[in-house]
Image (cartoon, rainbow, N blue to C red; front, side):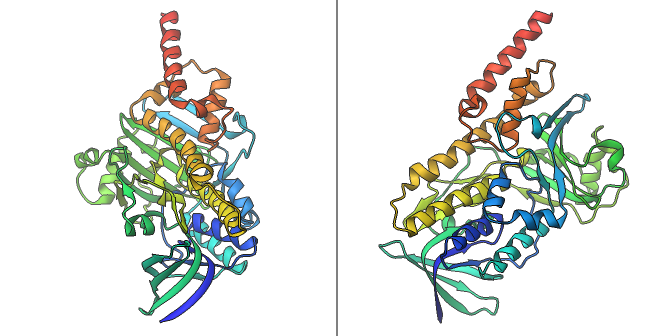
Length: 415
């Protein structure tokens, strides 16, 4: 069995792993990425948030991403079946930061980032499966993996960054997973040749359709005329629609007045796929000799497109701390990493929960819209969920409930 020595082993070549690897590599440390799949590979999480631009910039990826020509994204539009609209423009957000981002086919984005990190000198080994990890008392590790040829090899590292996404390598290997407090949900989705796009919606924003209580759809236009479309709900909702996955999705689309005519008869580029019960979390995001980043830590829900932003923000933060530790500094991983990450996760969680219980729709689809409140919520939707100057981040649950009471009061006054 061959053995290789590196400073840092990164598990997973998605955005989280690529960002972490680039930053640690730029600090002068020897990094290696291992990835179970072969890129390009399909994954959802196609609508980015402005906050993630900071991590892409820190990793040195922005020039390559800009050159690729992805669809620029400037906001998020919410609509319901009554025809009410709430249109957020990121240029109006309360927090200083990026005012735009991209909508991407993740197979293209992830391959692009992994290729860029390879150009920086970080080897990426695809179709390589981690089968065992042993940690020494000093936090160093020996990782056993299976190569594409089926051979076993080992990598010795001073530190491991687990950015394995839904694979959740270290949490599953060491029993760190725990149930999410979010109920199980299911999505049915595909890519559509969106021939009538410009008649119905601007392509430079995501469209979120409030279809029914607890049921919503996304429409994410890409730069090539293709649009990603999917419905999300508790699993039982889909049981009312029979037939093949395509017949089911077409029937659901036809039942929504916001998108029925737009997508009628349009070509589905692949048989609609199902993902369900995705919410997950861990009891700790770090340990002696390793840190978890991205969806390995906690994945909430796709409704506000937080996945990639949490992934790359966590990996940037973790990479900076890994460099500090390798430089001989004392790192308080609880205070400097997990507590900080949970600040953002918990803020997003407030709005996810408020969306599914109907409070957020009550806020979005009414006439009481103070500009400062809209701008502060816009910052949340842009991914700036660490801004403690924004009370809709710092005190999110109380502020959402307070806003509901103000809306109710304004209606009573009008009556």
